[in-house]
Length: 346
Image 1: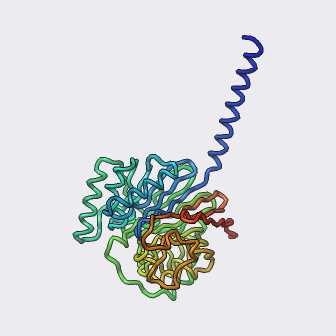
Image 2: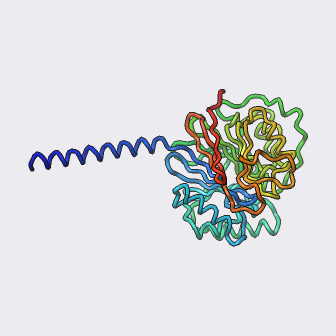
Image 3: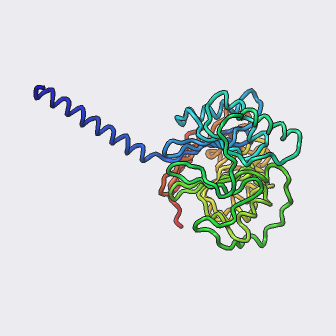
C-alpha cells in the first residue's frame, strides 16, 4: 500500500470517528418532547424521551372517520416516531380509549398500559371496553398500579393513581402539610371511570410534568391532603380538560405549576371556574390552551398561546421541549409562537 492510499484511508477513518462522536453528542443533547394533540376535547398526548422511546397517553375519540388517529399519526411522523413503545390509557371513556382501533390501523404499538378492569357499569362504557379488549387482544399489556414505574430510559415515569387508588407515600422532596386542604369543599363521590383514571408524574432531571387523566376532585384531593404527596411540578396538564368536576384548588395550589396546558375543546372543558383556579395558581406564568373555550367569555388565555382559536379548525397542536436542567419551551404549531421558561428557582 503506497503512502497516499494510507493517508486517504486514515483520513476516512478519522472522519468517521468525528461524525460518530458528533452523532453521539447530538443524541445525548436530545430533549424530552411532549406533543399535546388536538382531539377536540379528549386527550392524546405523545411523549418522546431523550433516548427516543415513545408513549402515547390516550387516543382521542371513537368515530369522526378516524380523525383523531390521523392526527396522532401526523404528530408521530413529525416526532420521527414509527412505532409507539407504549400506549397509556387513563380510563375507558370515549374521548380517551375510543380511538384505539383506528390508531392500530396507522401505527404499531409495543405495549398497552391501563388500570385493569372497567369500573363504570353503563352500556356505553362496557361497549368501549369490549372494543378496546378486542383491538389489543394478543398485544403486550401492563396493568399499572400506584407506585409502579415504566422502564423508560433517562426519565422517570411513576403512576400516582390508578383504579381508584393512589400512592400512599410521598415522592422524594414532597410530603409537606397542605394549607389549602382546610378551605377545600368536600367533593362529591364519583362512581364513573374518571375516578379510576391512571395518572402519572414524568420527571426528566429537574423537569417535572403531571398528567392525572380525568381524576375528579375526590381522588385529586387524596393525593395532596392532608399532606402533598406529589410536590411542585413545572408543567401541569389540567385535569379532565379543565372541567370544574376536577382541578381542585387544593391540588392545583399544592403542585404549583409554572405552566399549565389545557387540552380542552371548543365546547368541552375550559370551564370558567376551573380556568380561574388554574390561572390564579401561585407560581403560574402561563396557561396554554388547545382551543378557545367559546362559551367562557373572558376566561381564555392570550390568542398567541391558543393552538386553535376557531371552533372549526385543522387540529393544530402544542409542543413542549424540556432540558434535564429544568428549562423548557412551549411552541404553538398554528402560529409558530414559542416561549422559553427558565429552570425553577426552588
